[in-house]
Image (cartoon, rainbow, N blue to C red; front, side, top):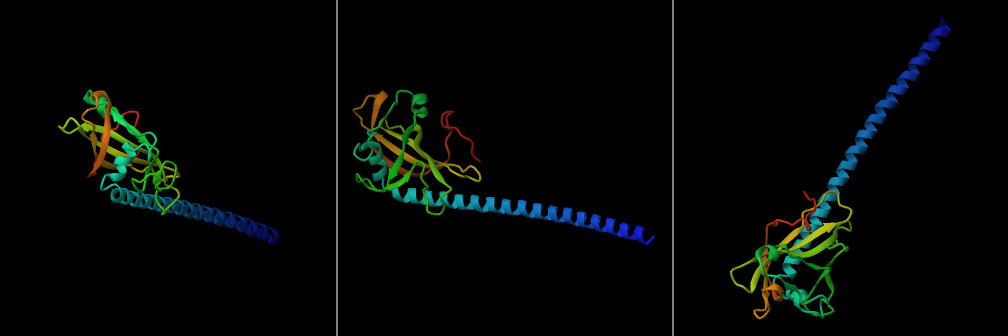
Length: 208
């Protein structure tokens, strides 16, 4: 009888250890999941802060229009310049895209890069990269030589969640002597921050 009781106690002891181990595993799993969730939220907040820092930097740098104008018109600063747009019809005008690889810190040739594709735009985090720099959603203003457009900066990198792009509304001036299907851009002025436009299929991407 004593031997049977000893075996029963040993069996109960093993069961108690297994139950305790299971409970501990559940607690550790829950804590790990919670910590991972908190880390993702911290990363998202950090990336969003870096985006806001970038937007503030761009608004200040592009406020007088000198950098924007130089990027679109000065071939010494940007070898792809001067750019032209086709204004012959509204659908053609609205569907056009001007793509840049970078924006400089000033309108002077050889000036440092302000933001560049594939490079973190803010010192706050290295997990936020510039994905693209584009002028999109061209619209008429009533003046045949002046147009509105959105400067869109989108982001990539090790994102916790997709971030909405930055949109800055710009006034685009063109040469009156240029043909309507190839209006040469002569200037770019700021018109404040804009709401996200309707993006064409080529420009569409998922963001929340």
